[in-house]
Image (cartoon, rainbow, N blue to C red; front, side, top):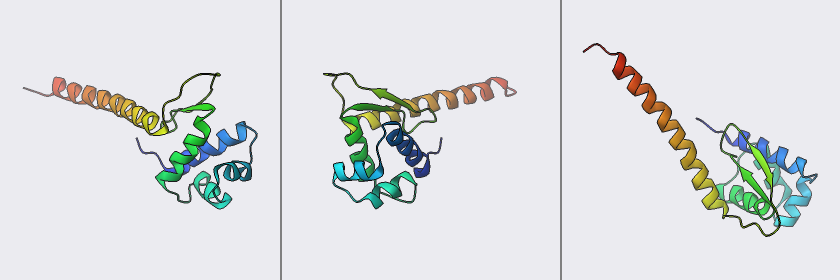
Length: 118
């Protein structure tokens, strides 16, 4: 599984648009330059700190799930619902994906060993 910054940026772009927000509105609310948001969404380079800052900004009202996976969901938060920090969410998500990847690879190794001549 290889995830490119352009993939993450495209998902963030779609997310922002689904909320009816402009890059300028989000960047002003976050206190960053619009060019930083544009570069992140276009996959032209950014920092992990900015990515986490953007996820934290959106995470105050929404749960962004599986942004590092092939599937991507936007879940509207309910009032009073507690959210984990973006760092925790990303770590849990990444561990889940790695676990799934390991299970697949172990299955392939098992299959190879089962089919090898003794």
